Image (cartoon, rainbow over all chains, first blue to last red; front, side):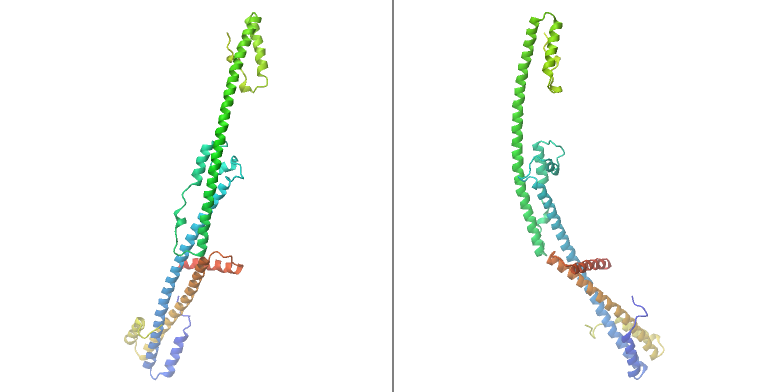
Length: 248
Length: 96
């Protein structure tokens, strides 16, 4: 802001020259008018320069903003891929696939999630499409950006490699699970057969008791003792009850 | 660069006022001297603004160079200078 206290040395000098060097007041006026013209031309030049500099600064600001935005996108992409790498590290052969922490990482909420659900969760989390920005080539790309893009490529490869390993691990796990189910099925069948044999023995024992004891009350007492002996040492939910006994 | 062909509308207006509104040549001279003072003050202000903008532009160039060169490790002095530059540029952004 211009103020009346701002010194004006050039105009003061012009005043001095006008009074000392000019013959008349009119000459002094002409001298001062020429001085004013010079000042106005310089002022116009400075005004143009201000406009030019402001435009240059706006351009630079735009370049900086674009560059910063691009770098931020790359940083975010690297950070995103790093997360996946950390996640997939769990699938490495050094880790037990059954550890609960990797299940939690891929979103499993249940401690005993079945392998198929886990595999779906794993695929959903890992094989998401990368953002388009990662493949965008900026014309103002710098050496550092190349380094970052290489880092992105490297991390992507690591992710894919880890995913392949994870795939193998899950396949193995599923195979192991099916094997366990198969074994469990044959064990159940075996127990079922044993149970039938046991029922037959009980029935036989009952019939044999009927021959030796004349009354129904005596037979029941013997059978109760027998069940008491049989149920000792078995878990409560597996204990035989009298209802299974085919009372003839 | 100033040239003699650049138009000077304000001084022309001052000339017109000086001859039509003033009684004597001396009054016309005083009127023109006041006009010259006003111009010189505005010129001083513009000169300061140019200096300030040049400094901002240098700052902007410095930041752009830093971004292009990449995230090389900076020593303490460089880092402080860069932080100040970014702050200055933010201030300028609000002014523009």
